[in-house]
Every structure is written in structure tokens, then in C-alpha cells.
Length: 166
Image (cartoon, rainbow, N blue to C red; front, side, top):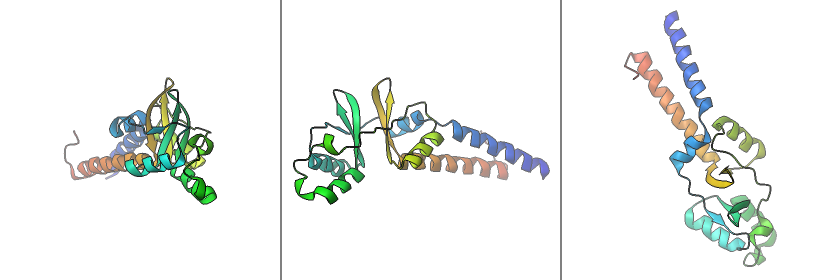
């Protein structure tokens, strides 16, 4: 019994280490690198229409092929509350979140999740060598952790029941 508990701890440590090594590129590969974007001169109404049409929570604001900000559902709610009558004419560049926090493909999921939680952001553009490589949401990170947990449970069940883990 002691040997089984020891083996179980080693197995769990291996899975914990694997989870810590998961990188953002793993999520972008699974999710895809499509990023919906908008120009800063477009209107808030244009942005809200896109959010609704594509069932997404954020748009990367891009000018001359460079990300300059992000427009999120929260930005739209704030503007709706403050300036509802002017939505047709407000430009995205006036209301986007311009302090752009970005991630890289090589970032590990745990540190990205920490940054997103600390900064209270739900969407993170992934930039590599100055180019947009993808966009991850907090939901994407939660899903990846859930999938990893499911895999761990599967392997541990196989181990406990004596099934071959290969």
C-alpha cells in the first residue's frame, strides 16, 4: 500500500509538472489564431455589431497592422452607460483600452492566468515578433485546465485499476 501511494504521488507530480509546462501556444494551436480586429476610427456601434455578429467578447484595435488597444464588452457597457445617445459617432480610438497587456506564445498558462486575474482582464492578445499570433480569453485558459484535469483523472483511474497507461 505504501508503495502504491508513493507511485501515485510520483504520478501526480509528473502531471502537475506537465500542467505547469503548458504554454499559451498550446491553447492558440487548439483554439486557432483567428483574431477579430477593428480600426480605431470605426464607431462604437460598429464594434458592438461585430461583437454580437461573431459572438465574441473583445476586438483587438489595429492600426497599420499594429495592435494599439483592445475594445471589450466592458468598454461597450461603460460607454453605453455614460454616452448612450452618442454611440453612432464615438470612435473606437476614443474609448478602447489603450494600456494593452499582451502575452507571448511561449508564456506558460499559469503565469498568464495569474496576470489576467491580477489585472482583471478577460482577453489577452498574443503577440510574437510584432505580429498578432492569437487571442486567448480567461475561458480558454479555464477550458485548457479542465481538459488537463480530465486527462489526469483518466490516467490516474487507469493506474489505480491496473489498466495499461500507455
